Length: 81
Length: 392
Image 1 (spheres, rainbow over the protein chains, first blue to last red):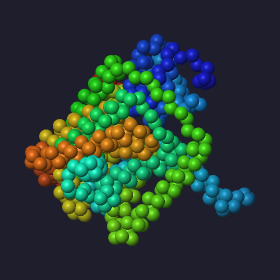
Image 2 (cartoon, chains in turn blue, purple; image 1 turned 90 degrees about the horizontal axis):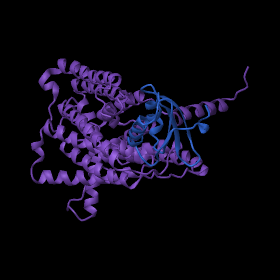
Image 3 (cartoon, each protein chain N blue to C red; image 1 turned 180 degrees about the vertical axis):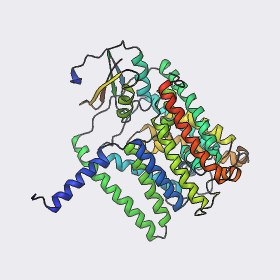
Image 4 (tube, chains in turn green, blue; image 1 turned 180 degrees about the horizontal axis):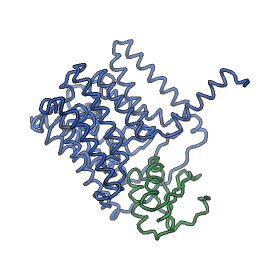
């Protein structure tokens, strides 16, 4: 899947936030995303690379993938189930 | 027949092992086993593993340099727990460098304030409970001191309260992201060399301590180093065991900590029952009042700060600048409150250690210990499926 060309419904900027705030905000933001739509998360906390993929595959949602952006942060993609 | 030389074969194997150890993340269950084994080695080598006393030693020195207190504190280079904790931080630093992950992480201003407040709570809680999440809970429980179980109950309560606060904050205090700059290719390339040199210096320090008849202290520095390496490679965080059942329902860390405690506790039982170490060793926690209330206060603090006593150290090792604030606040509060309680003779009123086999005998204690922590894991697994305890 070409993550760079996905069209997210909304983008959550969690850069600079550390555990557990990126995950907490992801959970909150995902509640507002309609079923089938995509939430993109921007993060810099190294721990999020475990937390967000693990969480993104729970509760009927699908974690689509992540990649490190050239600007120094990581982009995560979750499809609401 | 292949024409591979001995040296090229060795180089290829070293490269594969380097990737397995420093580039791929370790599973947390493996880290849980390693952590219990190193904690048992520390127990055999010197005594129970702790962390908070190292923070207090740092706090004592800050006050001493600030002109508060006339007694010169114990040298951190000769303090067993400061050395273990220093080793933990260095181990994480080396791990971060070897995996090319060391980076100075900036945080929004509110996060620094929360780090300070969380550090104050943790410093106070660790005084009341006579230990932090390591000495007051993990090690205390493994030493079969009922204070460890009381602190565990306090940590669960504190984590619930702390999470409630974070939910409130998320709804009412908006925070903007902070732009971080990517590390340069040159810095990424040089990191493993700095890490390798630092690791060599830690090993050299062990021999240096031995030369000065302090092999025991050198060993503690090295064991701490191993713990830092294990924790950073696996991102081992005690906070997750108490927070996640309420936050996402995830049971992974509860299972890991419970398994690790069963190994650590049963190893301790063998060592104590066989009188290899004194059975009462490490049974000095403030059961029940200090452990319970101290645990609750500590639990709130670790949620607000975003790290416990051990994960604060390994996160500093990977470059989390906000955790330095937590360390300083924890150290100052712990040092100040310990002095205050002692001067008013209140410390002994917090409770005292209760060695479970003295009450229940060894024959009953061992199975109950195992059943208790297995039950904790099963409650978490049930909650993961049902989300009955999830508050958000």
